[in-house]
Image (cartoon, rainbow, N blue to C red; front, side, top):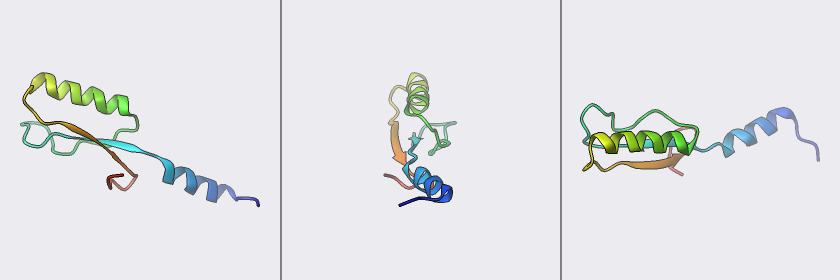
Length: 70
């Protein structure tokens, strides 16, 4: 069975995983950060927030391309 390039592109897009950093209640930090393509980028922002606000609750969530949790 042959697949067209459009089908492959659609299948690859569905497999993409994005990461969002949540830091509710932290001043000067949005509750939901921008979408990151790698977990390393999200971990970096999490460390940065925790260094500035050690008592903060910060979590990283995997999302699909529309922003819904996986």
